[in-house]
Length: 111
Image (cartoon, rainbow, N blue to C red; front, side, top):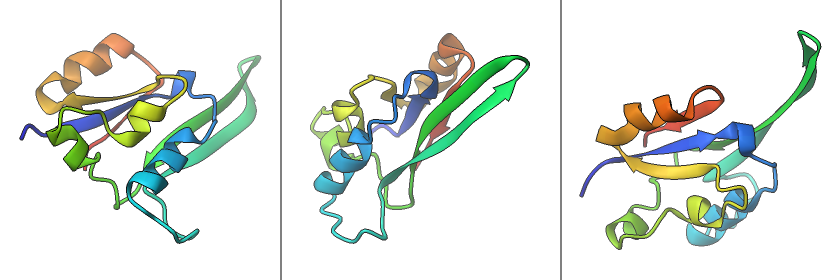
């Protein structure tokens, strides 16, 4: 199976937590002290006259990008359920090109 990375275009993340819920259900994580993905909030802060308030989904060490779903040709649960469509799983060989296309405000996770 090809290796994949998770690209998060956090400029568009609305902070809805659907990625957290989807991961928790997919991985059957019952503990409130463990997370497959956790939403981090930065802001609000004012920089150079503009306000910034970003949400960034941060995968934990429990994340394997839903390897079983990828093997079936499906997207990881967090990607599938992201309401803002700001997350995507891409093969590693496409990662540099895709991140360059998206520009600033993009994060990457490789399990």
